[in-house]
Picture 1: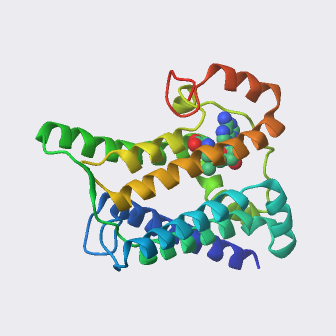
Picture 2: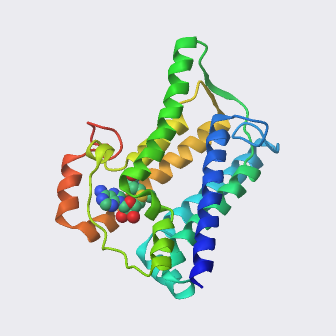
Length: 241
Ligand SMILES: C[S@@+](CC[C@H](N)C(=O)[O-])C[C@H]1O[C@@H](n2cnc3c(N)ncnc32)[C@H](O)[C@@H]1O
């Protein structure tokens, strides 16, 4: 059983790495596969409806499954050691569905032609993804993606209770992973209507998701988090936001 848990969690994590790499290509419009601007065509009304449903599905899965109530319910169905890996697996599946069902929507919102600005935006795009990845390591990459849990199950050790931490980027903003995503989603020299819908939907999800996440964080860390909220910006360093 412990070996199965280890294999299952490793598969979920490996799949996540591939899905994450594809997300970069999907948003950045790289490669020959489906991207925000390349994929099955549909009339604009249908395309809009399908895309909104896909964004909604992602938001519900990603946010609802992260709540303690859902986790407690899931823990009755699957061993606690694979609860996080299962979350990662379902996130992978919803994202794959989004990659293959997303409908491009033509129409340019902006197209930058100045080569210097293009380079700046492309650099920001990569800085955004690097921020996401680095922040996961600052907070706890292996726990976020379920690897710590399956390893503890394998070694029969127990998890220490969560501790409040503010390493590196977490001194600048409370949600650097989301800051990274926001940069990566918006920094583009060519903003199509489809890309705008994706970036807007994800931005809305992030700001709503933060409200739920902070409610949990306040419950877990109490006054410490309350004080942190007063001192450190949410996603933009130095701003209230
Ligand atoms: C997906 S991560 C997102 C973290 C943060 N929202 C961000 O954008 O960087 C969510 C996990 O990080 C944990 N977390 C967030 N901020 C934390 C902090 N300052 N100290 C310890 N754990 C934290 C939460 O408890 C949750 O398990």
